[in-house]
Length: 335
Image (cartoon, rainbow, N blue to C red; front, side, top):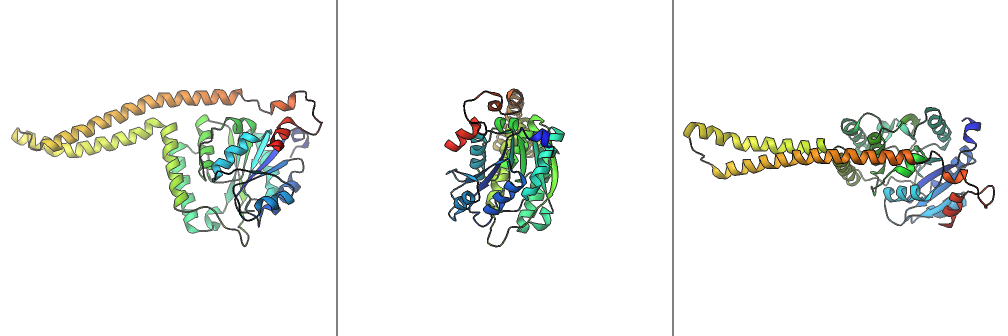
């Protein structure tokens, strides 16, 4: 990494953790070695196995988020920490801390707001075949719904700019948070890039917290909600088309019978088909209106993003605190 370019940048390493006592100390030490000037934060999410103690002994700043779920932890981290560059990784040891320097270099040279460390061989080495199949399915679904900006939307190894972190309206509560980050970048057309990295296996005694079916259902629901919020015309257009098709199916026999006999022989079916037709037009109209609302919201998000300083404002302000301490650090430690 270009030392002249990075020496004046404040870097924060963010590690959300839940029951990672067997791996977190090695992860913290790895980041301390790879990025000696970075501040390392471990956010403990109600662990019961001594994760917080192991992280503290390894030299990390340990915080706690009591609401269970990775999304809650990420929202708290992004709100609490002030920095110029944010590195987010998992505490399970599957991501190599030594790759952080290359991720930061890529971000600086390409002037990106987010760099995603895509996982080399994740489909072959996933802990369970259900996870691998889910990765493939959801990545294909994402590219068809939101664009082709990303090839691995579930990677937990990411580097963010201050602008991205402070303009990201996180609403997810669980493992859907990575999907929401990707959609946020795609929606605002933010400069992003990917860097393929090796993906390790969990060591003996460490277990995945991801449930194939429960978390898969949550992610699928998040896809639908994000589609409704960011592409409402397409979302309600699909529903409108379904109502229209059902209406035509029920209506066709009644119309055929009418031309043959001159009578409407199945009045309830005819009324039901008309109700479906009205619902179809209502869904189409709702999609048109909400599409305009969504575009206005995207413009506001973009303006908010552009108004965010590229670096922490506290770095350029005079301060009475010590030379090696920043206001952001003092507030965070006090928290």
